[in-house]
Amino acid sequence: MTTATSGKTSPLHDRHVALGAKMADFGGWDMPIEYPGGGVVAEHTAVRERVGIFDVSHLGKASVVGPGAADFVNACLTNDLRRIAPGSAQYTLCCDESGGVVDDLIAYLKADDDVFLIPNAANTAEVVRRLRAAAPEGVAVTNLHDDYGVIAVQGPKSDEVLDALGLPTAHDYMSFVEADWQGRPVIVCRTGYTGERGYELVPRWDDAPALWDALVEAMRPFDGMPCGLGARDTLRTEMGYPLHGQDLSLDISPVQARAGWAVGWKKDTFWGKAALEAEKAAPRRLTRGLLVTGRGIPRAHCAVTRDGQQIGEVTSGTFSPTLRQGIALALLTPDVADGDTVLIDVRGRGVEATVVKPPFVQVQVRES
Image (tube, rainbow, N blue to C red; front, side):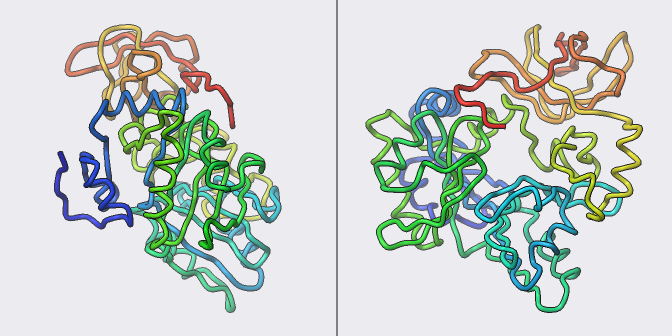
């Protein structure tokens, strides 16, 4: 059964409705949460064991083009584009001057004068606004949100599915190829949000339905499944990957989220550098993993206590289909250590959990 919303729709909306997907608002977009025939757990398991495809066309798309475009982006976003070569992609963050996270995104370095960005749906306009306001003469920042779809193919059988369509699969993790599929251009990037081996395909908006249909057919021999954003959330939480708006925000910096690995600390400049350097020296809270050992499923904003004192709160919490128990990411005081026992307030009841370092599960092909 579908649930009507008033949000924007992806180029694959009709496909989801025809499949009977449960739809809901996500970042202002009407997106599939789960499909009939098993729901979130079955879709999650398909990706961990076989293959699944996700419509993530709600993700933003933007281009920064012109002389020195890569250097300009590098002076704005946290990670260091000089670490990668053209044809590679990089996880990075757009911060404000206080060190808060406006958005986390993927930067595709096409050339020194051409960078393609994939921000989160609700933040695309703001990322584009900030870049456009700072861009030097000759560098154009363009919002391409509705020009491209995005389809994620994730799971151990991802290569076989793409091979069946004649799409490239031999490139390295976090690299991309500008390919041709039946005369249609499509970017094939070897990345994803599940921890499994996988790809994100970026076709033109109008080409997305035909590509989706071909992927559905190609994964049938592997018992693959279309997957909704519910499974995407449980998969990413098992890996400890942050979700903007919960684990990263204007109030949760890369330092607090333990995403300092995506910050080019040695760069001369990037937005928020001074604030982040100061916080790095003495963080007031840090993200930890919580593995529930009691009975209960933690959710965002559940209080976390130790020895009767609140030490933080859950930012993301869910039931892990792989582990069959609750897991969470939580912002806790910096004195908390892996192995500590804490209590999570789940609906007024203290549920015991152990502090751990994510990922919560070991995937078949670790890509991080």
